[in-house]
Image 1: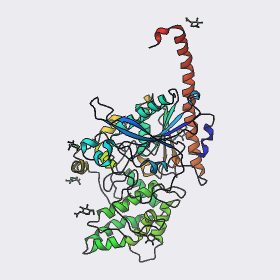
Image 2 (image 1 turned 180 degrees about the vertical axis):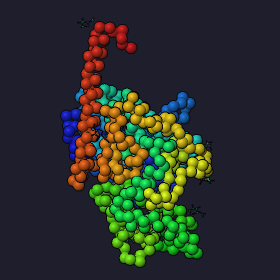
Image 3 (image 1 turned 135 degrees about the vertical axis):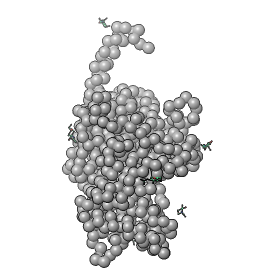
Image 4 (image 1 turned 45 degrees about the horizontal axis):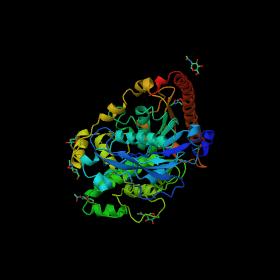
Length: 503
Ligand SMILES: *[C@@H]1O[C@H](CO)[C@@H](O)[C@H](O)[C@H]1NC(C)=O
Ligand SMILES: *[C@@H]1O[C@H](CO)[C@@H](O)[C@H](O)[C@H]1NC(C)=O
Ligand SMILES: *[C@@H]1O[C@H](CO)[C@@H](O)[C@H](O)[C@H]1NC(C)=O
Ligand SMILES: *[C@@H]1O[C@H](CO)[C@@H](O)[C@H](O)[C@H]1NC(C)=O
Ligand SMILES: *[C@@H]1O[C@H](CO)[C@@H](O)[C@H](O)[C@H]1NC(C)=O
Ligand SMILES: *[C@@H]1O[C@H](CO)[C@@H](O)[C@H](O)[C@H]1NC(C)=O
């Protein structure tokens, strides 16, 4: 989008990115963003100023829970001043550290952090903030969206930019926040681009097998033998683990940094790699989660399939996942407990509101078969945090069932963009809902590919997707400015003739 943003050149832009995010789910559940991303992203070249805003810890109560300092990044290179009503673009930040998320940032050049992630930490430190269910209780999507609304309004006052239109952007969990914020705060933002936002991955709206079936499809479309090898590897891993000395042998075979005391962490590590590979199955080399070649799943399957005859299933999958974990060849050993992006807050979110049922089917999935077991999740969350998940809360708060009927009546100006290779696309909005709630779908796209910086390698379908997004956003801005122009004349009429209208 960056290269194409010249179509906005007549407008004055204030680019503001707010980062919110999704993090890791429980064992055997995919994370929206990666838990095992070992490498630091290459230093990004985005220019921004870091600022802080004081936020109430609890926006929804008058008891004094205290405040915290929310970090945001801002770029005003395109800002020509408030007088020209330029738009403000805000990125709704994801779970995770802010610079890491900046490395995937796009046109917008300012970023606000999601509370409880990175530096936007209540109670002064992560240790205190994550102490128990009481201190964590302000880590909710509603509070995070309210932070963004307060931030936008405060910033607009500071810049004397009250009349400037605000457009929200977000990818993945950030995309969900952008869409939900547009629905909840239509007076704060005129529209939202929600990329790869699985707003329907809740309750019974989509089948719980959707995610893993889509991951599996991505591998099967490269090669059925690759799919079959991975599918066979789980049983091989289990039986190896049962052997005397088996866990030690597995740790050696998979070049792990530490001994294993069960196969579970290794299973999670492998399945995470496949899930993330499906998400970042981009058409050109990228290093969002990890440095990877273009079409990385093709490369994984090539390595799995091209090992010499007689190579064991486990050796094959090791060669395969090494594409994900060690593409640069610099990994000394693999650490299964790594969480370099500080995503652990997602565990809490998954145990409270962000309950996204996941299962794996018998035939369509290359993962081991498992059902969604709410009782198990409930017990796990009670043990980990002393809380019970509220599986129906998100759909109560933001909707989801019969989405089209509900949103076509009252919502507007949201783009749901998706690439069908992305396993989260199955829980997102893939059909147009109304004239202004638009689904832009690409067959070959992956996880929020459209929000990545444009590159010389962008395929035409990606360039077209971004151009469509820009056209729609321009329409929103023009509509807003026209609406304001007519409101202006009504107001000046009233003011000129009846000063009693003034407060
Ligand atoms: C959580 O920790 C805080 C701070 O240490 C403490 O005041 C509070 O009682 C704890 N709450 C629970 C439920 O343990
Ligand atoms: C297994 O290892 C992990 C991490 O190394 C540790 O946290 C856990 O307590 C161990 N479990 C058992 C049953 O020893
Ligand atoms: C990573 O790849 C390099 C080059 O192929 C290899 O020498 C090294 O052993 C690999 N690291 C691990 C942990 O497997
Ligand atoms: C679901 O999990 C609970 C608690 O771990 C267990 O008792 C129950 O057998 C599980 N149900 C199924 C169908 O696996
Ligand atoms: C939704 O409508 C837009 C035109 O406004 C069109 O470009 C797009 O392809 C439609 N999306 C789907 C999924 O049909
Ligand atoms: C409103 O004010 C304008 C300018 O002061 C005046 O020309 C016009 O007649 C007024 N209209 C009414 C309805 O009082």
